[in-house]
Amino acid sequence: CDALKTELPTSSFDGGVMAYGLRNLSDPKKGLSELRRLLKPGSMAGILDFNKTPLGTPESIFQKLYLRGVVVPIAALFGLREQYAYLESSLERFLTGLELEHLALEVGFRTASHRSIAFGQMGLLILSN
Image 1: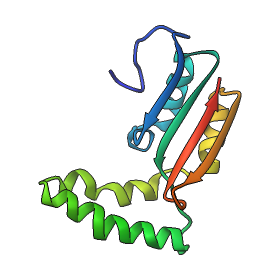
Image 2: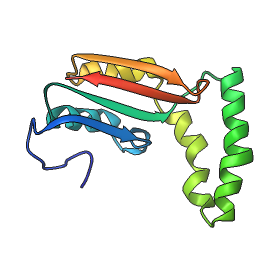
Image 3: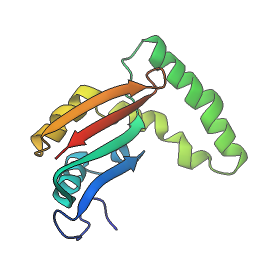
Image 4: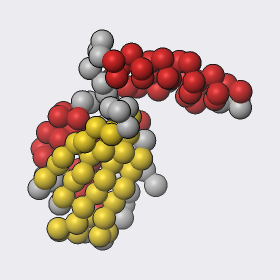
C-alpha cells in the first residue's frame, strides 16, 4: 500500500523497517509520521538508506565513483540503467543524518539516532516511539 497513507490500524505494529525507501517518498516527513502512527507505544523502527555524504569528502568521492563506475554500469547490463541512474541525484536531494533525526523527532518519535555504516556509504536511522 501507499507508505504515506497505509490505511492500516493505528498502533498495530511492534516494530518497523524500511530499506532504501524513505529517500524515494514524495514526502519523507509524511512517511515518518505514518510509520510512527502505525507503531505501538514503546516500539522501535529502523530505516536503512544511502547516506548523504558531505561534498568533497573521501566518502562522497567514493560514492560518486561507485555509483557511476559500478552500480549503474552493472544495472545497465541487466537492462536496468534508468532504475539506478537516478540514485546520485536522489542523494543530492536527500536529508543528512542529522536532518533525519530532527525530522523524526518533529513528527513525534521519542528518540532518533542516525549512524553512518559501510564506510559512510549507508545510514541507519534508529527510532523509538
